[in-house]
Image (cartoon, rainbow, N blue to C red; front, side, top):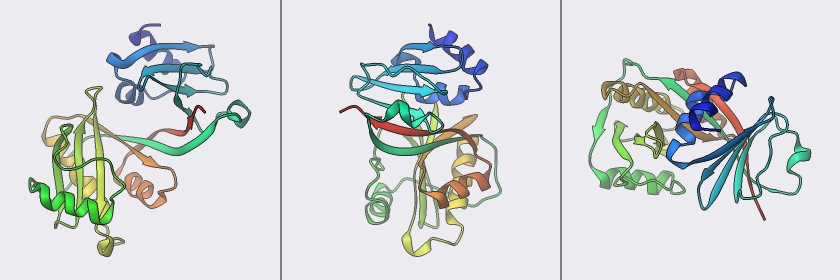
Amino acid sequence: MKFNELLVVCEKLSISRKFIEIWVPESKFVEAQTNGESLSITRIDSPYFGFGFGPNPKIDQRWTSFALTRSTPKALTQEFQLAGQWDAYGIKTKEFDVSYEVMTDFGIINSLIEKHAPELSIRAEDDEVLAWVAIDQSAVGAICKWESGGHVLSAIVVAEQMRGQGLGKQVTKALVTEAFKRGIDYVALGVMAMNEAAIATYKSVGLEELGKFNTFKVN
């Protein structure tokens, strides 16, 4: 199956085409298999990562880790180690009425991340970052161009003492607005499933669910 054929199959199975285009770069696409109701996708990633959709996707023996939709029966994954649960969301960009600044002071950005979200892998100077936006230097987030050529929102951080005041919503709106101004028509993001507050924020801004996944590691 070629990549363009994969996109056709996704539409038939009601799988988000935007999700595939962003998380499965055509340059890293290896192959896909379908039985008419389920779909398995293999992509290059140390050395191979898999995505499975539907009730009975095939788990490829080459996968070192993989993500399956959370509706997949547990019986299919009993022998594998659950590594995490995450959701994907996306939105067509538009301009919100929100005040923000495009921040270029990497020291302030990295300080905010190190103090309030040190677990994040991204830092201010990383090559994939197109822009950082900030609200009162208390909330920041990044617009990144991913390996697929698609655009994702990343490292959305609110200073701990400022949480609960709506800054997460404001910085998300600012990111979508700045992406729109830069001619980017669509942005997506991934969020841990347990982060209910962040998910509620993204939904309130208008981001739509693209998929819910369990990630597994192969022992």
